[in-house]
Image (cartoon, rainbow, N blue to C red; front, side):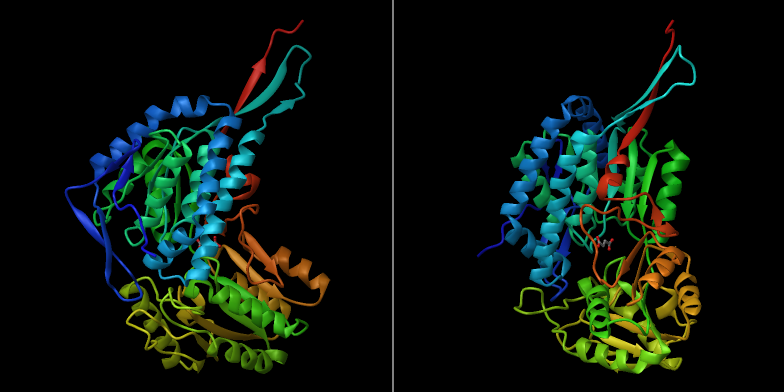
Length: 481
Ligand code: SIN
């Protein structure tokens, strides 16, 4: 079956070409899939202006009507999961089954927030004098803009666009240059679902000058900005947004998730959880376990079981049956992983399996387990974003928590234990926005996803996700006799 997709940008309900176009590559073989418009500041301004123009009518619809349109969008996505999965896999490299899983995950945000649109409740507050009445109402912030990452070409857009549209905001997204085609497929389905022109806009760009991003951060017409990506870039964008026009900002940034295995854990469950967490999307998620902390008493048994499981992971292009680990996104990504592993090996770590590139192609890395990792190594202190599991030994719960918290990041954390008291104790002491106990995967549309410390601001998904696109307005009714 041929894979059909759009490759023009989408602004004000129109498919827009551009004088310049950039190539989109298949990371499995570096072949060109398509060319997308390389738009700049002028088109970004136009998209923002169009979203601004569309805002009053969209915000003015009953929440129920917006919910019905979102429901249609969700149903079209659900009917199209195969194509969306193939597209995500083609431009992002994910194995098809995982990519189709992302398409379902992405669609679920549209379903969830369509339902939540109807529950944007205010409050009645008991007044401080009998002559007044106090209430709050919730109103959409205005035009919302987003910059999204390549590791979830669909879900990181819908996790922002769905609450924005549900709240009554209009939306402009700049998708990553590596994976713009999935974003454009979402626009195609939005158009079919009856999302009015100007409400959902996609501005594609190669991003070599950052012009589009600057407009989205600095335009006075944009009232909300949301970014998923690195902490370094997030700090710059956040500063631009606040420094220019004091926008409401959500930042979902880098992580350095610890996964702790205590001696009282079910080891098979811990191995399963560690593989699921570490090797999801070839290690390229912000919530992947970055480093695995193992209690001394079970270190040997755990590392042996983990090594056996990792050595069996099937590596290859995303469209091949049974593949579990696809390519890394680009040359820079593979070079970074190679460098970090080489440094760890040179400093005394040992590769229990892997430790090198994979023969499947230039951007494939062999799933790796590193033993004898120490706290000063970069594989412990920095986000690896690749299929490499560094093992660090600990002797006590206090030491495990100290190592886990010894990072400026605080997105996700995982631990495995059979002791319910320890489960509560450690969960409360860990500095992270999300803690998963005895489970390596937790993401879905109903939970508040987000971090503490330098991992970001705000929450996406859950009831909290809608709040990010709403303002609370206080009303004072005075003059009661
Ligand atoms: C991310 O890597 O930014 C998102 C991961 C997820 O949604 O589980």
